[in-house]
Length: 327
Image (cartoon, rainbow, N blue to C red; front, side, top):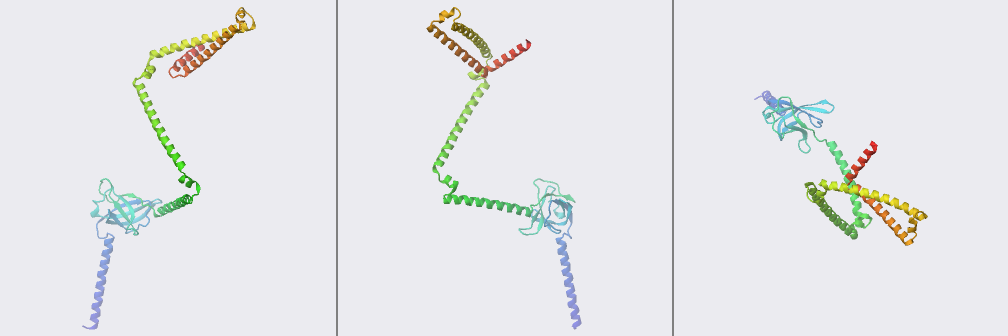
């Protein structure tokens, strides 16, 4: 074989191998970009699509089902991502599915991850928009972590200062920590609080029982409250007490005038009162009558404020006001 033919054969083999590699490359690139596979388009809108790019994988429950076809701005707060999904996977992805932007691994590229929804739905149609879950921003997470670390540092410094005071025996914390008398007083205080709470609960239960008896019409107190005959009797008694009080006041006034005349030496009664023993007795009787009158007035005032009789006095006051108005 001559030299020229050999060169031509090698050149032909080289070109053939190059063509084969070119075809394989096109096939691999086309397979990656779903060029030789029947697909259907869907879209999703995110508030932020940082790190996502054309050609990024789309996965459904961890299985690759398509690629990102386009990433474009809709407005200043929304980014639309067009996806190209394999036709054979249409029946699996429902309109209740939720798409999110995640990292492919710990430090990998951003991809679209679609997860099935909690409820059944219809298969996605061409150009449908899938529901989304906006991703957490790394910058915001780092800022939050930075603030948290600063707060933790402040808490740690304060805790360190507090423990140092306790260990070295300085400060109020150490006194509280080692003061056994105060600890005993605190225990007694809590015991007293428990006892008082128990007593309050017992009283509350008793009051509830009394209230239930009154509402159900049981017991003497219920009879007193609900007995209209007794209420009428009490009203009549109050009238009589008031009349007696008025009469006592009048008698006291008359007796006072009589005593004044006797003291001035006028009237026949002066002869009776000239006896010092009799005069002392009469004066003592006057004092007793005045005290009884004052006590009766106080009782009348107390009855006016008593929940059993104050209704009657209010009715009497209204009646008197009407009579005054009619005059």
